[in-house]
Image 1 (tube, rainbow, N blue to C red):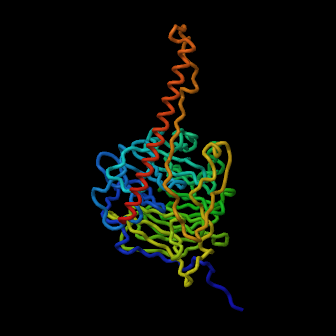
Image 2 (cartoon, one colour):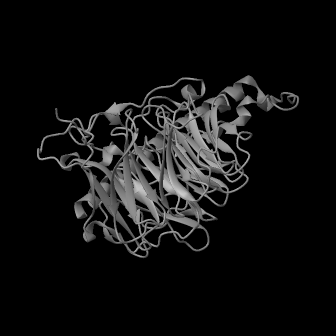
Length: 472
């Protein structure tokens, strides 16, 4: 009777390959700030990288197709007065990116499809509420315009970017610096790690800790946590002897880990990038020159080592492409953007297949760009799973959508101040009626003029996009 020794998995032979030299992005001065974030964010349209900048913080945004040497005068996104610590693309609008800075603010930017002529200095909105530097950003996975920020003041604020309001503030949960924050798949819970060595599961709308585990990893160095597809928590941290360690936890039973594995001795914090479609987690350590990847299943030992991609150069940061930005015709299941000191290099993870047909077992329906909820619906207690799309025909990004900010006028809620003055002859009902009609006609004319100008601007932007695409 034959005995199966090797575990069967379609991802057992996944291999990584660095892109050719002409597909890299050269001559980019990657930020040297000492902060454990990825320094890079990517979506199907743009690549954003935090860069060195004098007199404040900046990041560069490049169209994915703009490979090769980047001009030293290429326009940056500048507006922060301190170094930029984290950036994150909106999952529901590929032209919107948020940035967090040492200057205590969060800024949200609209990136045009064409290459701007000069630096982008005006954000769509600036979110002010933290008293110390802001180092963590994370968009809500299913609700429109909901953004989370975490700062050095040990506070998590959840914003409605559409109105500029703080929806929730979790300011009495973490006694020390927050190291990482992660939403679950429908955005109903948060997993956070903190300098006090405690892993917490938080219901943000109730401002309540649902479950917590002290010393999930016993070392003092920073810990990271992400939710898995099955609702477990995958963590990376350090042992008491400073060995790097990974763990898998069941939030319903935090007493014992589902799995706990020691890895190696190194100082770099392991950044986990989790793909829920394949249930593969990729571990990228800052200062490492390798990417290790593991498959998480419901069979012992639960976390299965697959392989390691190794290169010569250490990584300064890493960007992780959403599934809808991958090339399904080449069986690409992940793509990383590895930051070197002066360049960014794509790394492609591929499952070897002989067939040229669409591999539906590798590409289940994946979250698309449409939000499932509005911000107010989520805040009122509703939950919804992400709106899924099929990648069978390849992903086509939607047209440029503008982020609209609606500021509520606080004066609308106030009663008129003081007693009304006595009515003079000029304030007669007839005179007031005439003035009202004049104002209404003027407002109508202004609205028509603004609408005509907006249509003209849209037409010019489309012409510019066509010209740019024609020259590429």
